[in-house]
Image (cartoon, rainbow, N blue to C red; front, top):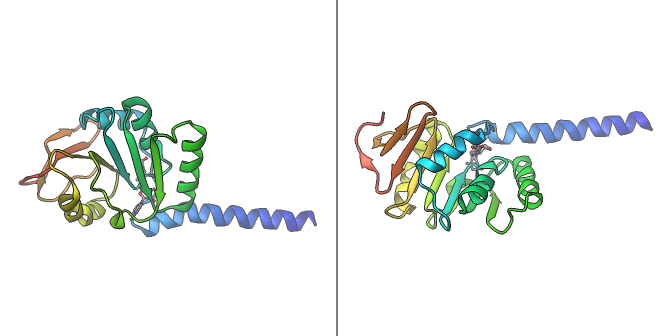
Length: 180
Ligand SMILES: C[S@@+](CC[C@H](N)C(=O)[O-])C[C@H]1O[C@@H](n2cnc3c(N)ncnc32)[C@H](O)[C@@H]1O
């Protein structure tokens, strides 16, 4: 009987860790969280203000959303495809007391409506942000900002670059020109 319980627990563990790792990887990027210090710097560079709405496309465990709400007074919306990341994010939001200002949707960000965003935060691969470029240009309002960790957009000139932390800022409409 106890051997059966151990086998079941082992299978559950394998299933959960498989979902944790495999789903994000299938969508083109593993789950790699951004450190709080770098998130804070990115949101400062984006000049995120109280009352503004931040979107994190590929929100992982919701850490960017929670920090944006707590420290910057923003409303924060995340879209995340990994089911286990969503579950962990929902628990963090619920038990961390941020649920008035933070929403995390489990789904594909290419299909999300991001028109209400004042700031979009992304930490994705170059291939993914190239694929997102037209959607961002079409849906984001003039004056809205994109802050990208580690990867820059092809053919858009960033308004600001923090080379130490590799953070790129773009204000809409984007400046055309060579990337960095
Ligand atoms: C590098 S992690 C960044 C997580 C979080 N933004 C942070 O900075 O800590 C990228 C996340 O994007 C998610 N992701 C990748 N493609 C996605 C898609 N098409 N729709 C929604 N989420 C996606 C992955 O599951 C992963 O959690």
